[in-house]
Image (tube, helix red, strand yellow):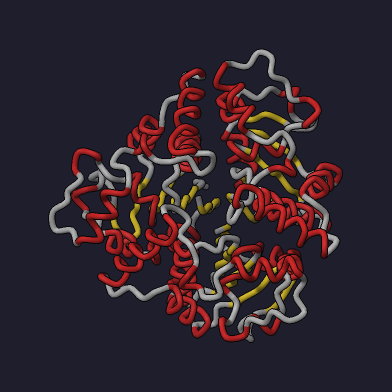
Length: 158
Length: 158
Length: 158
């Protein structure tokens, strides 16, 4: 029987995003179906940096947009970020091992047909628009997540 | 067969608590049995703000109590808290969408008969007392959590 | 049928490590097979403090090594660390309850035959060496983690 992996991506941290995407891509290589459900800070991973659009946003939504990185390579580390120094250190270490940066893992997941879902309520609260996300992103509610999660063999909250 | 969801609530962050309670309430609407097991910082969600009691606490327990918010609406965000500014921003955004604050989600979960368990060891270490929690909270050990978790279809660590 | 618990230890926080090890040890007491897969900051839990070796490390790896605690008792709390004051407070509270410190829980897990796996990619990126870890630690890739995880009844990302 086909195996399934379901990841709830809550965090927008560089290192946690890496961990989630490495699991997702490894699972795809093993022919496992993978769903990633992005909520809250995790939604920062789904924005197409070329399509961020400040129009029709409220004052608070604009402020939120201004405070959060447009590009996933600027996301902070979950620990030892030290105003970006820790992240730079981590990236130098990735580079030394020829490990690709987050952007490449994300691209890989998109190409490998990982299913990308975005939490409707979070999208509304944070003022994102469908057009700001990658085109394959589907906006769904928590019930769709739950339905997918209990058909899965592994569920993680990242 | 009946579905079950089991959430281990470790974090006391405003946004993570929201995520957990949204899942719990959505699952209840689908007639899924939900258990939330609260440990460490998660216990801050279970205290009845009207019943916090400093008597019979050691010096360190009192200090801990003084340093942690009495009211769940004062819990910090997991990211971008910026001394409370981020949380205020998040709340303004919730408000714009007519999304209820954390207190309402918590009330909903209690009304919807989500099962609330508190980790015995954490309760003892942090010096909480049964009387400080909502009356339906049951104090149990890690084994009771594990028994419940493996009867469940989804288990998450939040 | 035999039960299995699988914990992915991403975080290197004192309190989250405690939570994971308490679950692992409780499960072992119930005769449950336990695998802990350590990745990123979680790897800081696996180093034998007597065997940390700066030779053959790159400049960035040495810097990383200098910035991270050698001894698990110096790991930060996930919240309220306040430059170590919060951790000291937590330890005083542990002490008052005669609860053992993290070192003892880790020792317990090793003695109780919890299976310790380390993520190969993280080990390479962070510049750790097999000899720096406890001898029973096995270095494996994400696929070995996934295989173990879907044979398990409970999987958590900590």
